[in-house]
Every structure is written in C-alpha cells, then in structure tokens.
Length: 186
Image: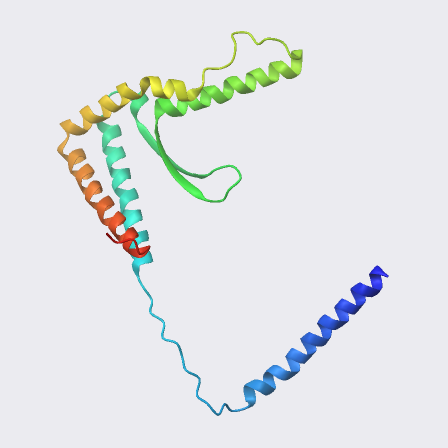
C-alpha cells in the first residue's frame, strides 16, 4: 500500500516534469503580442558603503591597539583581537580582550576541566578547594585598574588620541548611514 502511493506520486511528478519540459520551449518560441514591461530596478550602494566603513573601523581599532600595546608597560593590559565563530553558529564575531581577561577565562576553563576529571575518577566527592573562581569576577575586579591604565596611556600619546577621535567620527558616520539604510532617519 505504502509502495503504491509512493509510485503514484513519483509518476505524477514525472508527468509534470515531462509536461514542463515539452511545453516550455513551445511557450518561449511563440511571439508575444504584447511587449512585456520591464520593472526598473534601482541599486543602492549603501550596503557597500557600510561594509567599507566597518572595515575602516576595524583597521582603526587595530592601529590603536597596536600602538597602545607598544606604549603600554603592563603586559596584563595588552589587548589582542580575534575573529571566531561561537559554538553552534557560523557567524564570525570579532572580540578584543586584555591579556588578563583571556588568562582569567582560560584558568576558569582549566579549573572546571580538572574538577570534571576528579569527579570521573573519584566520584561525587567535595572537590579540594571548592569551585573555580568565575572569570567574570576576576575581570570585573581588575576592570577599574585596566580602564585607568588605558586612559592614561591614550592621554599621553597624541597618535592614540587622534585615532580615538577619528574612530568616534567614523562611528557617528556609520550609525547615520545605518539608520538611513534602515529607513530610520531622524
């Protein structure tokens, strides 16, 4: 019964395909008595401009971080950027973090892994030393010190100040173009 239904559907699809294959060339060959009106299409280059501005923003950030890392004396506060797709998605995201932040997240992951290993080896016992300190707490605790260092280094160097001003102007321009592109002009 199930096989018969499947065969009927397959035959119906085959008939439709054959009908389309036979009739399409015939339809194309018959001259049209009316001239088809073509729609006018306007291509807007805003998307291209937005992408170019976004790339320029990334380049400005890279220049700023390179110069900042060069001048910064505290290696914990050097900034590194990566582009990665988060687990479960293919969307690539750029993120920039200070070394101390990267280290805190790595240590949290290592501590959690060690606890998991101990749990597998010894069973559900209380872990020595308790749970790992969440990385977000470490990051938040050092954030005021990190921000102060960033501001101090940026204020002392005219090149960093110029890059920040240039980036601010470009962000305003980008936001304006984005709003215009989405029809949300003020």
